[in-house]
Amino acid sequence: MSRSTRWIVVSVVLALVVVLLAPFVYSEVQEGRTPPPLGLQSPGEETASAAPAEPGPFDVDGEWVVGPGSEAGFRADVLEVPADEAVLLGVTSDVTGTFRVRSGSLETATVTVETTTLRTGSAVADRQLQQALETDLYPTTLFSLTSPLDVSELSSTTAPVRLEASGALTIRDETEAVTVALEAQRSGDGVLATGAIGVRFSDFGIAVPPVAPVQVRDEGTVEVRLQLVRPASP
Image (cartoon, rainbow, N blue to C red; front, top):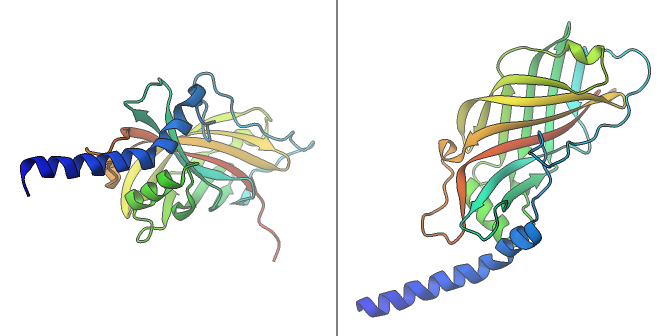
């Protein structure tokens, strides 16, 4: 194959990729839209709202599980587009987890996210995301608490409580020590917990090929919005 022929083939392939990705790029940058946050708010964004707390004393001790209405996902800035705040946001409601509190201290916590159901709003982007995460081999992401966390303040206030938790995050079978910025607040007879983990995607073996027409920053956040409830009685 001659040099000129090779360049023609490469150009055609790149053109096809651009056409396939165009709907996704447009959906993210039109009208300067920025997806709403899952975890802690960014400037100009609103926090997730909690339901009014049930009156009376509140006992934070005991067992808790992740309930309906919970979400988890990731957020990354899109590069080289004509908008300052173009963001790629992947979200799933397939989140499970268990928490154990003793004497006001969160002793154990695990959260499992089903990465096979992460959705970005674009079928093309969804397929590329599944390929990058290799969800056929690694269908879940796991967070585990590694140090006890004092959550006793939740028993005495209905206001949001800001916390910082140490844990281990596992994506694609790669585990890294992480710090989670948390905001927890009584919500009904449960707790609403929102959080964000700053990550470098390449630490977990996630990378966008250099020739891809749409690039994202290597640094992003893994975010959660968890409705914690008491487990149902057997």
